[in-house]
Image (cartoon, one colour):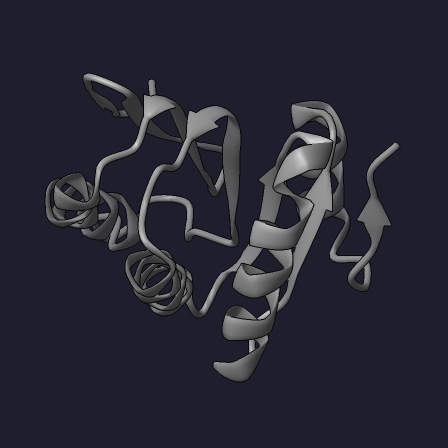
Amino acid sequence: MSPTYSMDGFELSQRDGIIEIRTWGDRPAGELDQTTRLFDTLAAPPPGAIPVTGVLYDARESFYDLSEVAMQQRVRTVARQLGPFRVACIIRPDQEALFQQFRKAHAGHGHAASAFASVEDGRDWLRSGAAVVQALP
């Protein structure tokens, strides 16, 4: 059984060495500190547990209404937080520009991220260890 943590608009769990994050609704600037603590808990599993090999971040149901500066700060913070993991972002086509900002920030820390339209495709990519791909319709 994998631990699952949830709060309004946010769910985080670990399954087979992959941390799965799902967010939905409006994503205000102030909630990032709360979710960071939960992520840190799962990213450091106890001895003998399956090591974390990647992060699947499903943001398809999330909506961001932040200033440009606040959005850039969030992207950099999340990119730093999710390192050193490979990240599969599950996004809507209209979130492509935001994903590209994240991908660039994450790559700046030496890490890989790819975007997908489905959870299954993202999970398959994380398990395969394949190179970065772009799999949006």
